[in-house]
Image (cartoon, rainbow, N blue to C red; front, side, top):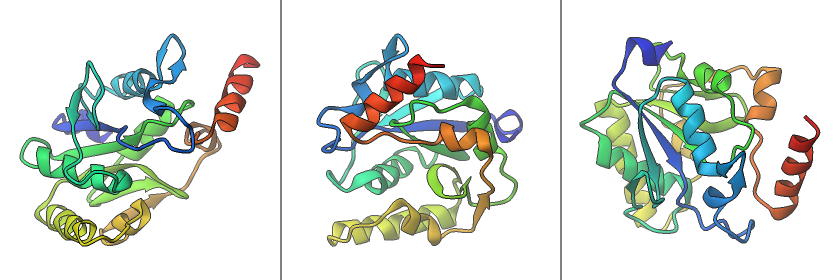
Length: 195
């Protein structure tokens, strides 16, 4: 896997959103004896990613505040990439709202070759990004668009890069199911209690 051959990789948990649909900060939702952010961090550690950051601010984590507030995950991605651009060769971006995330699924995303970015079909997050002059320039252009008032989705961000879209496995379908509302969070708890 990439991270064993290339130890110069960091994991970034995207936590900077307003969580308006959930009504509370998703990162701090209680999950499996800790918070949801701790669960996601532990999954990344299982894949031997030792350098972890959060996009946003969470006590106990290296935090990178969005340079442009309220610009969604792409604002956090651009801010993080600018902050870490000279320190790592690869970055994996993972949203905090994946209560069933698995190390096996993260390892699939990490299995990069020469692609600039890699993710699983139908799920632009999580994605693994190679830090190159082109990916940095691309992020700078996206950042300028955000400054000019444009809203940009993660899918739009990725479309400007040399991407590899991996087929989804049955295991990853559940692992990549996110949760955005109190009703979805209740479904997660109901499903977990029956496992």
